[in-house]
Image (tube, rainbow over all chains, first blue to last red; front, side):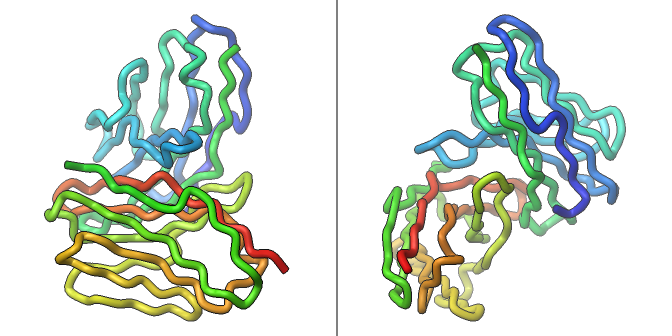
Length: 113
Length: 112
């Protein structure tokens, strides 16, 4: 898993509550990504980061925010969870610039009830 | 456009047969085409990748065929085995953007 740890692995939360998912890497890679996986949609990019405090939106960023205050941690926050955000969330890293090969974490299954 | 379209959504193949999954893209700026394999409860893992300067790449039983003029690429799994049963994703990327666009996924089942 290229030294990627996602936490929590499973979470059930209520509609309207804030939720933060954490991605931790041990190898100081510059590029980190958050994807969501849904049946019929594959993997869709939510946000990504190309360095500490440098982040950008992906294709499905509405309702999500991210922060990266340290190289090793990339946090994904759902400000006010909705049922449409029930999904499996994956963190990924790219090991070097110019090489878009991505290594994925184990995923976090989030259920919003 | 950034879309990558993958087909079929699901595929059942007999052991020993050939599994074929297809993808099509629109953005001619894409210059990196990987395939990922995902087992239940796990994250996707890179299986094989190709760049558009070659038409085919083979690694063991897995082959990518690439047709630049048609903007299509496909994954062929020869002598398919039950252990190949997984979900497969194609993707496309370009170095300037440092990110990937994924297809919708194909659930492959190999019957023994």
